[in-house]
Image 1: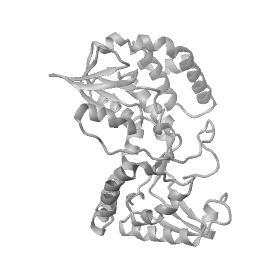
Image 2: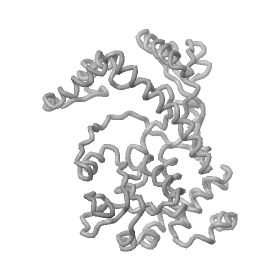
Image 3: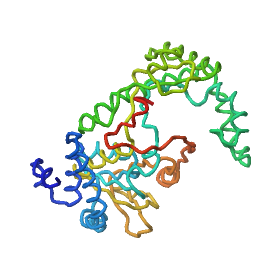
Image 4: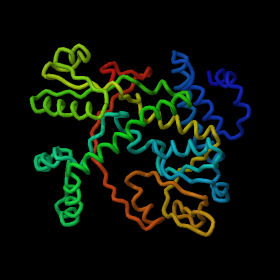
Length: 362
């Protein structure tokens, strides 16, 4: 099957590096019809990767070649943001090196809901959150935990948060989030269509449901807020809700349907597929830990794995999430005010056709 796939792709003969050859094969697999042969080929490709990756990586990414090259850009972080940036720059004609300390999509990019939501326009700094904060802090399983030893450090930040709850700053934050999220889905559609990965995106909308009177009131308040912002939203009573989502329990009394939202069927697969496109375009990936970022007269110096000889690039992009704090401080002296968030999601086995059969939307 691999040989047949390779023969169908006339561009494979032009690929010299083994890693690029593998990326081309995987790219062909992602575009193939999703039939039994496709899934058999994909299983063989995965097995091929596991067996040959330790052999081909030293050939495709020779550490000495990496150190002796001045790249146009070095992107640090193999999550969805870092991969998309690296792919875009590589396709624009730059020579890009992507550095990841673990594996592609090993962090938050591999474990999240994959939801692309135009309805998410309410900032975290809201009066409702502040009112519920004492209850959430007293709940050992609640979504918020504060180490009380740091109250003195938190108070200036908390005072600024309360100051942002005034009407004018709150509405300005809503407008800013609306402008960002309005562009999100069209941008994802354009990217995945260009890379022949549209089958990983589902344009089925999403739902928010409630089982209590308080929950119903909150959803109705949100409906009015979204309607005022010209964001499509539809109210569903209990009967309508169970017609659309028959597997929901009967205690759900109503909900909202957001028709202009979408989701990807597997965030990790999206990230890995885009990374395969990056490698196929000639980009390099180096799995190492960045210990220091400095600047010389002509380029950025990046030290990895306690190596004395730095990597060189004309610019560096840091896309390592919460781990960006130390790297940004090293390179600029600025301490970025980032905090990590506790997330909740249920991981289920994904069938080979990408459909779990429970709900058609988040």
